[in-house]
Amino acid sequence: MPGKKRKFDCVLVSKKKEAEGVITLKFKPKRAGKISFIPGQFIIIYLKNGLGSKGKPYTISSIPDDEFLSITVKKVGEFSTALHNLMTGTSVAIEGPMGRFFPEEKNGELVFIAAGIGIAPFFSIIRNYAKRRLLRNKKIHLFYSNKTKKDIAFFDELNRISDKNKDPRIFYYLTRQKIKDSRIKEFKRIDVKSIKNKLGHLENKDYFICGSMDFVSDIRRIILGEGIGRHNIHTESFY
Ligand SMILES: Cc1cc2nc3c(=O)[nH]c(=O)nc-3n(C[C@H](O)[C@H](O)[C@H](O)COP(=O)(O)OP(=O)(O)OC[C@H]3O[C@@H](n4cnc5c(N)ncnc54)[C@H](O)[C@@H]3O)c2cc1C
Image 1 (cartoon, helix red, strand yellow):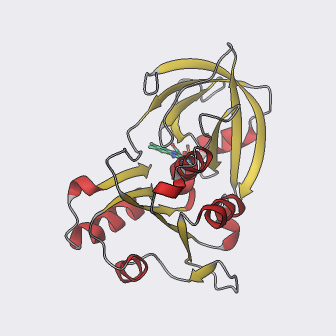
Image 2 (tube, protein in one colour):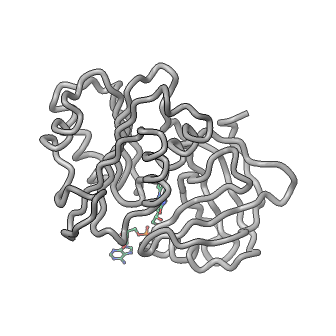
């Protein structure tokens, strides 16, 4: 049952570069079967080395239909560097899934707002909708901020889904680089004027915000400031 928390012994099957300092790691449970989850949920991963007793949370970036469960990790400090350095074949323990950062049936128009590696839950949610041919009945806007183009994870896959399905409408923002790219039009931080400009109006939508604590609290504050109710704003901070 999705949402039931358990601990699984898993093996690292592969690693793939997604963006500057960002890799996806695929894991396979040692015992047969898959780990059930709802796209948007996260797991806690425990390494069986010096960092052994310490686990850290990572969003599941794969979808339930994928053969392996994956996480997508930005290299920032001790634990994420250890994950980047893991050799394929290494055993880890994975606990979960957990978390409630996902849209529900009752949610109508969806606005996803991500910074950097905060794209991970949205990538899983969007790919899952695409796979299940649910994008036809959804209106989704994705605001995705990065420092430079090299930092954008899942760029080609997101564009492919968007081109094929019309949704999500994707608005890329770069904060530290100005380039000519038909897909990237905004060279600043995501701000309320820009969100309003793209959405027309902010009412009657559900907002999902994911990224660093500062990013999430800034965006949440500006959306609340526009009179949007708390129950329509959902957040996941990566700390
Ligand atoms: C629900 C949830 C989901 C998450 N999902 C993801 C995900 O999908 N992908 C992902 O990459 N992360 C995710 N995270 C974040 C992840 O759990 C880790 O916090 C992250 O990888 C950093 O851990 P770390 O040990 O590598 O860095 P830490 O050592 O904890 O460092 C964190 C920050 O502090 C800085 N820092 C570290 N040491 C020092 C120092 N001595 N002096 C000054 N600055 C320092 C680092 O540069 C870094 O910016 C998630 C977090 C949560 C809560």
